[in-house]
Image 1 (cartoon, rainbow, N blue to C red):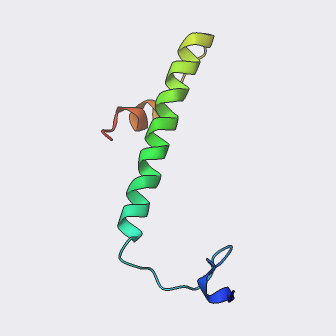
Image 2: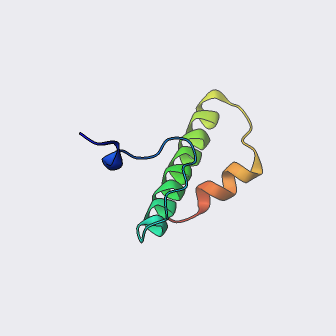
Length: 61
């Protein structure tokens, strides 16, 4: 096996492919879901949730 097939680790200088917007969108969806989970958790624990988390959780998937 050659190393050419392996992804570069930690900020390699590989050219960004056409799938970069998909990766960005996937990352955004994960962040939105995490914000929604934090809202639920904070509510159940009786803790205040920061405004930036609320705004992120309000975004559509």
